[in-house]
Amino acid sequence: MISAVDHLIVAVTNLDEAEKNYKKIFGIDPVWKGEHKELGTTNAIFNFKNTYFELLSAEGNGLGADLVNTHITQNGDGLIGMVLGTEDIYSAERLLKEKGFSVTEPSEGSGKSFINNEIRKWENMFLPPELSRGIFSFIIQHTHGGLPKICNYDRASINKLDHVVINTNDADGFINIYKDIFNIRLALDKVIEHWKTRILFFRLNKTTIEVVEQSHSGEGPDKLWGLAWAVESIKSAHERLTKEGIELTEIKQGLKENTLVTTIKSHTNNIPTLLIQHL
Figure (cartoon, one colour):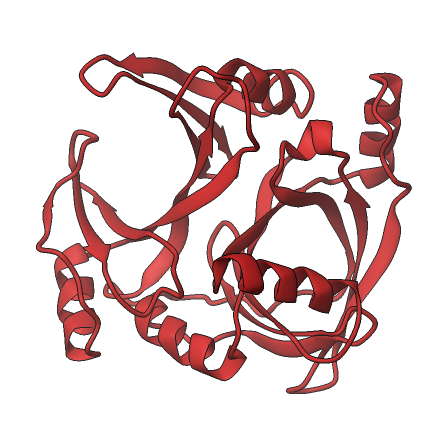
């Protein structure tokens, strides 16, 4: 049913400033700048090998502007949503309804580029609370147009999303939805004894959804927490980011064997951000 982490959405107060931050962090330019006129939002999009990253700001009135403004009022800038991709949204709608979920019918969305007036279109299906589990999320199928591809990523630039981290108080409930309903592969279910923490890894489109169970209460919504981005050379990336005036920790061995990591401490618009190199 679900074939990809299609994209991540970040709510920002000042789109131009956030774009400058992430041009420095990613080492690439956005491939799209545009608007969703009916939603009251403007956006800038960075494209990667396995997903894309959308900075979203309110510009006028609409459901999108309300969503962004509410999040910023409550939490400031930060991760606001995770969008799941499918290759057949009407089949996904049918399967979810057969399982007893009240999902909305797919509806068309569109965006217009400020750069060349190009139009992109897609079909959205928004999820009820029992499927979204408290995270703003929806299922998408792109139907017209597309984002420009980046053919070559510099060794010092970010090239793909390694994993997105979600906090939960109900790991079993998360499995019931993401594995049993969405049919996303559960690659790891492990308890880290010295942390007294249960960790789940779901894998699709060369991306990991890492789920951390912080308690066993089963109460409270899931929350998007942070992102880890892959680089070809973490040493080169660290040098480039330092020259850009971005604060980072020293490079060290990652928790996963044969990895090197560094944490970005500034310019992230409140998103905990890790860089990782797989050796």
